[in-house]
Image 1 (cartoon, one colour):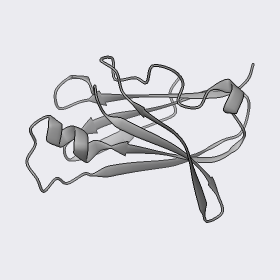
Image 2 (image 1 turned 45 degrees about the vertical axis):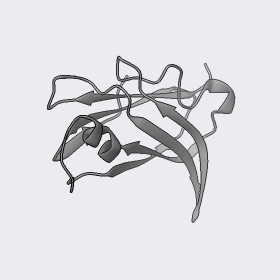
Image 3 (image 1 turned 180 degrees about the horizontal axis):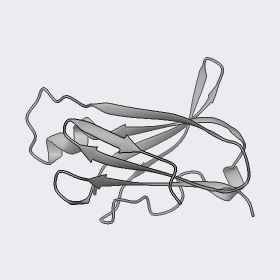
Image 4 (image 1 turned 120 degrees about the horizontal axis):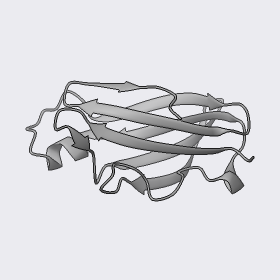
Length: 115
């Protein structure tokens, strides 16, 4: 099985998926950051396809950046916001399905390696 990466975002303050949130994926090599993909969450809070598909998978360091501030402003939260961009840096080491969800509220977030 080739490795791949998926993600999704849940708006815990509203109790539903976070639709319309932009996510950027980058590969990290030393001090160099290379953007690989950009996607927007659908009505289920997920990207329509893996953000890192199997044909582009390689072990290494990666970073997902969630545009939380843009999403929260679109939901009617006033500026200045506590959260803006949420970077999550992690390592992919083996050919496997990696899933990195984000549980988001206006004043905090949680993430974990999902399934």
